[in-house]
Amino acid sequence: MYFHCMFSPYNERDDKLCNRCLAFFRKRAASDHIQCLNECQTVMGSCMLSKQQERKRALTVWSKVCFAIGGAPYQITGTALGFFLQIFLLDVARLNPLNASVILFVGRAWDAVTDPTVGFLVSRTPWTRHGRMMPWILVSTIPAVLCYFLIWVVPPIEQGKMMWYLLFYCLFQTLQTCFHVPYSALTMFISTEQRERDSATAYRMTVEVFGTVVGTAIQGQIVGMANTPCKNNTSPNNSSNDSIQSNNSHIPLKSNIFDERCAYMIASAVISLIYVVCAAVLFFGVREQDVQGELKAQKRVSFQKGLRLVMGHGPYVKLVLAFLFTSLAFMLLEGNFAVFIKYTLGFREDFQNILLVIMVSATVSIPMWQWFLCRFGKKTAVYIGITWAVPFMILVVSVNSSLIVSYIVSIAAGVSVGAAFLLPWSMLPDVVDDFKLQNPTSQGHEAIFYSFYVFFTKFASGVSLGVSTLALSFAGYETGVCVQSDSVNLTLKLLVSAAPVSLIALGLLIFMTYPIDEERREYNNKQLQLLLRNEEEEDEMEVLKPDITA
Image 1 (cartoon, rainbow, N blue to C red):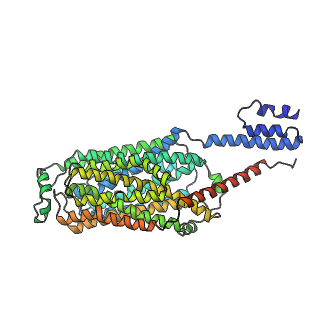
Image 2 (tube, rainbow, N blue to C red):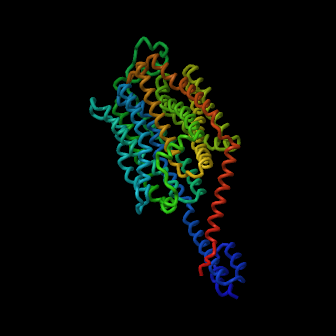
Image 3 (cartoon, rainbow, N blue to C red):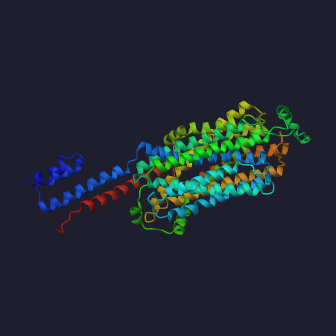
């Protein structure tokens, strides 16, 4: 009798309540009325609250797409700078190789330093009506695209040209960090449901990989439309390049360098426009959720203590060191391959197409590597994926200049680039899980794990660009010539073959000591699921605890 008159309006006629509540109501209907009332109201309230939270946590496909689009600017600009900035500074801006090496190294090193700094400032930012991450993204966008555009402008001055590029390169890296660090952390604020975050991350990775293709295509194809002005070099040290010189001797000295400068400016303007559009889609298409209440319940640990704990975790250190060397290898290849194709191989009008083939191959290969690591394990994927390009790196410098061989090498290198792009981000969560099990009382250090991996890879990028450009300076690199000397060609061969192969070998040797295999990874996953289940049961029991104060 009490069941029907008190709870029928809330369960029999309300299809929004779950079956668990209905069964609970019927089971307790005949028991003590006061206790039943208290318990049923508690269960009904928790059920309705969970329904509201579930609706709040759920992300639409549109929200995930908008979130993913926000990751495109970082990859588009990064790819364009990685492939083309060195050759732009040397052949268009006509900087001394030594000055170019300083710009590239200092810019990337500064970029690495700004990551933890901006991360610290973002973590201390108060909540606003637009969220805590979105204001950073919104405010940094316009200044970032202005600095990016000015990087590709040749100033009408000679004495301060180096400072011009160093200033705007460092400013752009800082402003882009102010965009990308909050964007990366936004993953934790778009939903409180782990499944939704993982799904949004999958969308993001797909768009970011596609962004590398877009950056290479836009920059390469627009710049490729302009002829590179150069002068014939008749140095006796170029005897091994007679055939290449004969192919390029038709390039006139009076080619209009203004055309190529305009091409770089047009390409940068197009990329800048895409940057702004992507930022706008992210800002208007994604709603940042306020999870400060949950964060306040966690025990806050100082940054220094968290850093000591993370850096003392052996698997993380070994993984970062291994991928540091392999990433450095592919960065050397990326930073010097355009110059190598243009001068050592002599394909001045095809280098942008070859670079595009590398990124398309990397994009297409990522689903294959995702299947491979799920089927055969992540460590096996590292050994196969990273070493795949080694024979082709040796091949490209061992045979005579051949366009077909160059494209074959580009396809093979792209497959390994895809593996190098995917595997670190796939294995870092395993290290974090391992850390959580070994340090159950110290949680919330995910940002340190990711930010310092990015820090080390960016620093490695600066080292690779700076050292390689400096090596070209010592070898006698000349700006604007059609053919470089034999010493420069030998240096380029070392930078795209011998040095990367050695670094890959060193990285894989370190990786052999990495302790998290498939068996340990599955064990960690089961233990974490068990801990999570126990916590959920404890929370549920706390919610269902009857109110006997009445």
